[in-house]
Image (cartoon, rainbow, N blue to C red; front, top):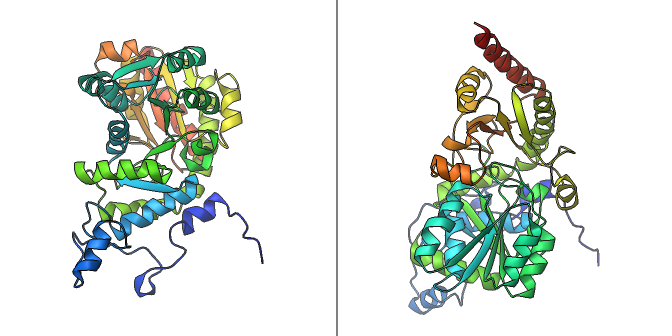
Length: 400
């Protein structure tokens, strides 16, 4: 018997979930735009409804196009099962709400996406959940809080928008000692650069709107892990209704097929841009895990296969400099998305932490001069030249 060779992630991105072919011999996943599925045999219908026979009943519960996407992320993350959602935040909040209740305790870090932070600071406490947010770089503090009792440990690494790194394997081991479920947002890294399940995580979450889709034309979220956990997440989605529509699923499937090509180019440019920004006098700080001076560069090297396409930097002069610099960029959108083929710039106050007040951002250590870059697939030299001319414009304008 010939042993089946493990295929690469680029191949998985193309063929994952689609090995068996499609109806009508279609080479691409069909969009099944049907709300319901009919049965003449009532007993068979009942078996499908109970999950005792394969099939579909109602697209809030499952859909053939969405199911293909779920199978594809399972292939990329080496997960047993997956559940798709209408948005990234639907995936994040649903995963948390599935496993937390009155009296539960969740431990996380201060550095996380602004929407996630709002769930921790505003919504979970209303449910009677004890939320503990630790200093992101203090693994000792996180471990100490886990040891006090923890139902869910929630990690985001690299963090949005400060690009901080936490040691997934170390913290997952601490959580396992107290029987906690470990969740990790893998949106920034993508499955190409980081596989949290292999590091001890139980549940991996993606905002599929971002790098997985890659073209800023579809919204979605994905949660994956072992089937017993995903069965609970799936039940929560079925009842609460934040299901992914088939057309968005189709667009995300199509986007994933070029994920490897896109990310390889994007992170080459991200490394070059971050190195250039270190030489720019108007920049006070640069955040990119691929830089040797990054606080946790060593951890990033150990748990990541590449450093990703996200960079952030802090401009001297704060928001005043931001408002002068960004409009001068020629090959970039100023927008609140990330992970697209086009380069995207934006300050934290209008992107990752738009939901937070100035005081809340300051408490989280997010400067008004912090700018996030989602590096696109444009030629590296053009992106750096674009930055140079924008900085030069601001300098010349200041001298007038």
